[in-house]
Amino acid sequence: MSATTTIQLFVFLLAGFVGMQAINRIPPLLHTPLMAATNAISGISLVASLVLAGSNEGDLATVLGTIAVACAVANIVGGFLITDRMLAMFKRTPTATEAQQVGDGASSVTKS
Image 1 (cartoon, one colour):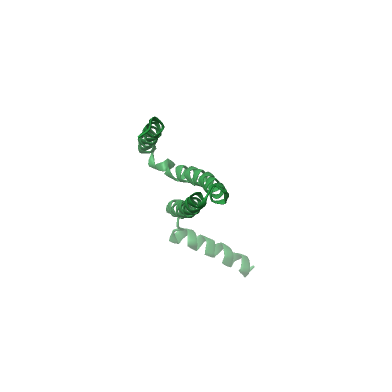
Image 2: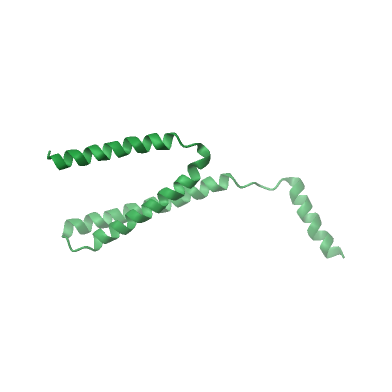
């Protein structure tokens, strides 16, 4: 293994460790905004993979770029679906009394 590969592997492992520590320290209330931010980062990786897929660097770069595009799109779509589910957990369903009040308000307008 060359020195460059060793340094790149070390940076990758260090970034993974720092990322895990940062995520574990975030309170659950902030997970939804964090998901939205990671979706934005996935959008940046989608642009980079499109550039790689469209480059004329050879067949291997085109194939790897196309695979990267598919993975980035799947990541973005999945992230938005999960974020939508998380936001749906915070929506309040109307109680029976609130539904009754809304119904009474509408019927009183039509009676007069």
